Length: 439
Ligand SMILES: NC(=O)c1ccc[n+]([C@@H]2O[C@H](COP(=O)([O-])OP(=O)(O)OC[C@H]3O[C@@H](n4cnc5c(N)ncnc54)[C@H](O)[C@@H]3O)[C@@H](O)[C@H]2O)c1
Image 1 (cartoon, rainbow, N blue to C red):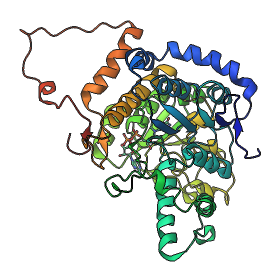
Image 2: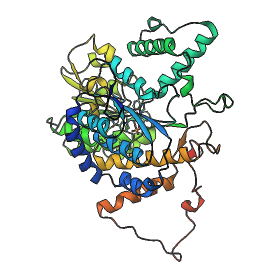
Image 3: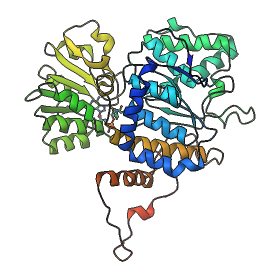
Image 4: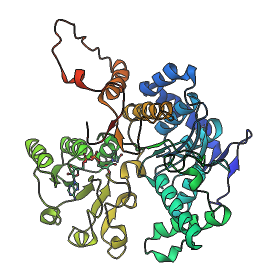
């Protein structure tokens, strides 16, 4: 694909696979909206006051139909949005086309090369000479990584005149990142400084301030993995899950119900005990590597299944990842060893080989995103939030859950004053995000 930015008739930039799919995308978007009550409530509750007016939001997050509903929620609250995917395989081209035509600048298509992927990330961060985004929705952290590496290279260039050298690293992807930063440096040696988050360090220089970066995290219902693996004959197959956290638990129990035999590996004694209480054996990878038919990594850590493990696997064993986005499986090592089937090149297979989570599940996650962004944006000049990682307070989780109950026909019981005892909920700080570790 020629890497040339295109423009809509209204002048908005984009690069997608096929703009003629926009009507199809719109049709599916309208269906998804019905399944995403949290986001639609945000539109009706906050839309009229346009709280994001003046906010520039960059997103690096799977460009799916559900993400399209998130993007149009942000724009309907007044934001200007530029978007790319955080996975070379996860874009739904009809969703990208509908958003590019109707709502926001999109740079994403299914099956990007790594070069194309980083070009798209750079485009999503490029808001022109006026600087960068005010906020980033960053699933995987690549947009943030590009800014950090860019700032580092610009500082070095200012100090010593040195430009980044892609040949200085063996990591093929990082070579591309360094190449992009090197080329950017020639155009504007302060490009990434203009995007920098750091208003505490640079208050007088009036640098454009990046207000915050929000990491998308979804609690473990990997339904697409379920539907995908259901099509394989699972009965009596031995599945090994590396990690029994939120994602691992949901998937392992779904696979068990589908008739598979399931084993997990764990490093955490509590998670291991939880698996055992569910009747799932806990072993080490080394112990069962030659017996399992399908291996699924869900740990969030790296280098979980290496080529030495693959050498001991059955011929045509299937290996896939639904944990950290691309480095739980040793893909470089695999090149030296055929005989294993790896799905989605070791990237999130539920997004690479299927269409991600259902709209209703994503609505819960994305409504949290919108509320967190509103909080950051509203408090941008008050100093309420320091440079720390914050997690959403429970009362916001409760609000999001409440917005989704009606759709499922549930009605909550109301606690009366007389039946009320002092509860944990009275002790919480109801007003703010919590710094991690202090909750
Ligand atoms: N595929 C998707 O759509 C999707 C959705 C949500 C989250 N995620 C990703 O999945 C990953 C896990 O998320 P989570 O919420 O389940 O996290 P979690 O912390 O709840 O679970 C991870 C589990 O893996 C275990 N673990 C860590 N290293 C291990 C190792 N080397 N061997 C065995 N077990 C190990 C931990 O003890 C923990 O129990 C994250 O990277 C997250 O971003 C993917």
